[in-house]
Length: 473
Image 1 (cartoon, one colour):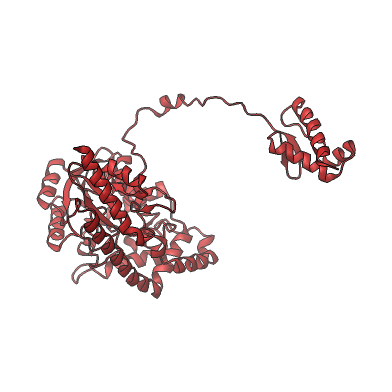
Image 2 (cartoon, helix red, strand yellow):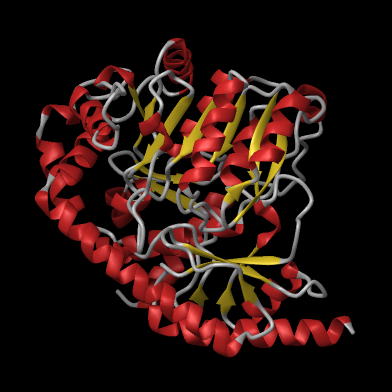
């Protein structure tokens, strides 16, 4: 039969549907074929036309039914205002570092390295092996797979000097990423309404985790040599804080690495004030011209709680971190982990252990060092050439970021918006400060995609800064 025949059938069925209640079942295809003396193909064509118009829906094995017509009406969530009550803490918006981008922009904002900097072949092979093993169907221990606990302990223990006790596998708790670890630590070691000292600027995710935990942030000035020990001592004395969150190696966002004298002084202050140092070693695998030096390797009395992530260096899909803590603090942390996540996926743990246990992992890290150096130096040189009004206090010896100082008469948010309109994404530095910003900054990630476009990105930044200064005048 012709298209006109299927149209006629659809028109008659449309009238039937209009008079039928929602959910009514249409006659079967066989019945319709007999009724209209049409072929099954023609009947099916008519039914597809009705379905495309949203009038009917096919349910496999059950038949075709009249679709309920949904009436548009406004949502009313007003009741939730009373149920939720007042907001207990500030709820910041999503970080610029987490924005996803189309392929045609120059991405200098991200917090993760580009895919080509990851050990993709090792990761894929590791997941394939993990899927065939017991980890795919079993429940791992709440503190983590013993083999992975041992790996984290051995890596840190290799840096422990003679005379100090290295950590054991029993001191390690495996966590679902370092962000989860920060939340756990602020809950377990600090607690709501109590102070925690933090470097300023510091990692935006730590600020978020502390605020979500209701912890009171106390900023301590920190620069290219790390925190000012005198200011840290003063902050401990004034606030009575018993914890200090810090990134001694290749800090996010500044890229700073503490020199030995600062590290020794900070560790002495933490001990003197009977406090914990929460050491975030997020960039352990991203040394370029320097090796990471964990403070936890120089403490066996439980003052340093050490957090080591594999997510950025192995794969964003491998949300695995190791936390090393000694004494009763470890018990409290494990109790918090039980309440929050119970355990980390055994498949993720097995895959992470597989990757870092391969000889090719060390080979990958050596190659990564050279790739990061080339990207960093390319962006540094381009900024000096194309953005002369900006300033880098130091070229970081590791990590993924440059902390770019802007002139004081510029607005970082406005500069970031101007850059985005020109096809370059950057992150304004304000969100890395736990209190009022101490200057005008952009955080630039040199490990993103398309490194050949880094000079173009620097050129856009220079133009945006110059335009913003002209507008300010």
